[in-house]
Image (cartoon, rainbow, N blue to C red; front, top):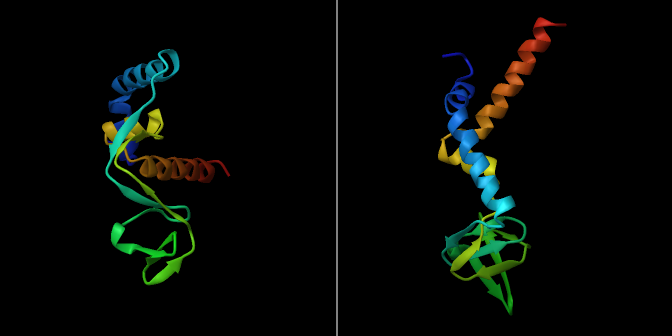
Length: 121
């Protein structure tokens, strides 16, 4: 195993990942399918993203939330339970399935570039 452990994991599953990725792209692009997933009811802040229900406050008809006791001025929208489009891309889905940490991959790439620059001033 090299000092780039996440890249080692990626290399070990690359054949399977490639096949799965081609299949997912075929479903999306050639068959016209969209991915969706089930969400329970939730509140989404335009500024902060998803917000726990206990942080929601109302003022008239407007919803806002308190984050660490500070009011955020982003509008909060209630989203009822149901299927919603899944906006994750194929790469993100595959990384999740194969337990590849994309942040570590990026950090290792930067380390590789730094190593190359140091070796070739």
